[in-house]
Amino acid sequence: MEISAHLRCLFSASLEQRDGSYVFEVPKHEIELGGLQDGETYRVAVQAAPTTSAPDDAGTDLESADTSADPEPTQTRESPPVDAGEQRAVEIESIGDQGDGITRVERGFVVIVPDTEQGERVTVEITDVRQNVAFAEVVERLSYYD
Image 1 (cartoon, rainbow, N blue to C red):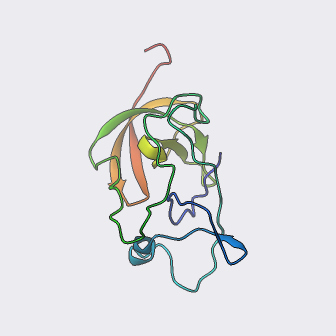
Image 2 (spheres, rainbow, N blue to C red):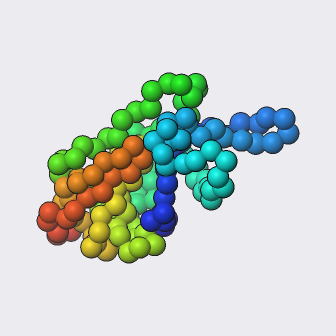
């Protein structure tokens, strides 16, 4: 799956029926963080939420998955599962529109890694963490036999 470099936010939500339409709510903090503006028009992609027992697109089991939206929009959102300075071994799942590698960690959290190729295994250091995406740099390129 390709993720646009213009990604503004990423969150899970439940689809609900209201007055003959189907809707999902954008969490209030997405507006407060400045990623989205009230009254603007955005392109929205919908993807089925993975379960903990089903393999993800890369064929590996997910450790955990957030398969439902917060029951109340005022609840505190989980913090990102990575911290700046943290190192992780990852596999690049896809390449974004700008040519950067994309991988996912816990709860499907997206990490953007420049100068990588799809399928490449690398150790990365997280350089910047935002509420819905993190950025990392390659520390080491790993062999598939390690």
